Image 1 (cartoon, one colour):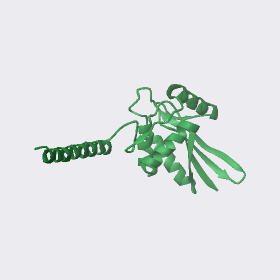
Image 2 (cartoon, helix red, strand yellow):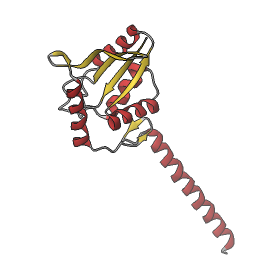
Image 3 (cartoon, rainbow, N blue to C red):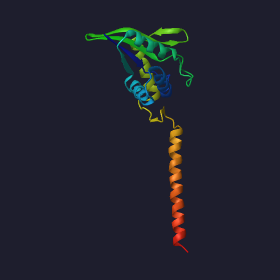
Length: 169
């Protein structure tokens, strides 16, 4: 037997939030987290496989306890997470839900499908570009790259000025 932790799409969590939570909770790199977040947005969900139920449940608890996305005023609940038992003959639902102001909310599959549809309606199907470990945003590494380009241009201009001075009396 194996277990699968599935994280579902919704319109109330930003890419940056999802990436940060995956890095912190699941221990993946920002690039891997971005890939999972992109898959969740595109396909409505992404799955993480575990060999033990206790490990899958611990990851579920940590994702649920991460809470709402403080960047969005309409984010009132945690990510929506499902734990499934997988066997050669199929899957069995262990749990599916999220944590909101009133505590744990069990969700039906149709409710999760509605969350994904609302996300696509609100945000469209396009996936943002990852820059320096953050979706949408430039960060200091991008700034360093721009400064290097500028310094290179200044050095070239300085060399050209020296050549011109040497050629023109």
